[in-house]
Image 1 (spheres, rainbow, N blue to C red):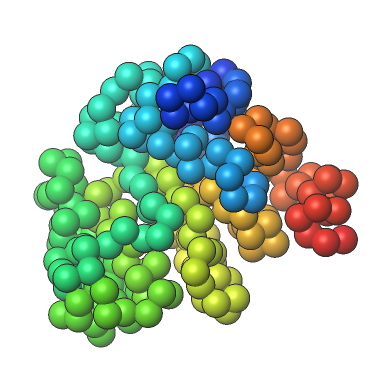
Image 2 (cartoon, one colour; image 1 turned 135 degrees about the horizontal axis):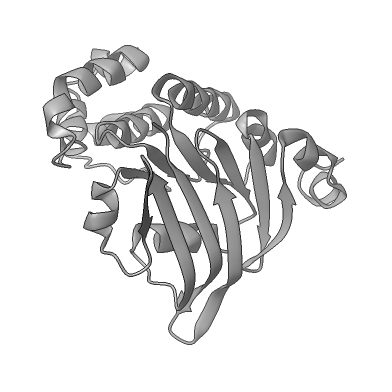
Length: 243
C-alpha cells in the first residue's frame, strides 16, 4: 500500500538565513510529484526537512501509511527512515571503496527490510542488469549513470513505500538523464511507490510527473495538478522550457 505526504507551512533555514517560507505541498498516494526549480531555490533544503536532517522552525510534515499518520517534524532521521521513507541524494553519495553488492546490502539496514533482502536484491539486479554484471566492482570506479542506478537500487533495498529523489539528472549526459528518469517511472509502477522528485531538468521531470510544484526563492509559486498544467504554465514555458 503506497503512502502519502502532506507538508503545511514549512519554514526552515540555516542560522539567521531563512530558506523556506511557508512551503505547503501534497504528495498523494501512488503518484510521482515533481518539485521543480533551479539551483539555490530550496529544493534540497526541503528534502532535508522531510528526512529530519534539518528541523523546520514551523509547519507540519505528515506522512500517512496503511491508515496511520505520523508527524515527521521533530523525529530523528533514523525514525523517519524506519517508517518506510528512502532517499536518493544529489550526487549519489555512494560508498566508493565498497563493491556494488556491498553498497546494496547496506541499503537494507532497516529492520523491516532485512527479511526481504534476497527478494529485493533479486529485483534490483533484474531491474538494473548492469549492476548484476558489476556486483563485485568498486562503486567509485563506475560511470555516473551506473552510480545513479546503484543509488536508486540501494534506496529500494530498504523496502520503502515513499521514495525521495534529489536531482537525479545532475552530472549525467542527456541520454543517461532520460534513461534514469524512465527507470524512476518503472520502479514507481512496479513497486507501487509514492515518489517526490526534486529536479531542475523540467523537460524530463514533467515526462513522468503526475503533478508538480514550482519553487522559487523558497516559496511555491505555482502548483500544477497534472503534467499538462505544468506544460501550459506561461512562467515555466518562458523561463524554464525556453518556449
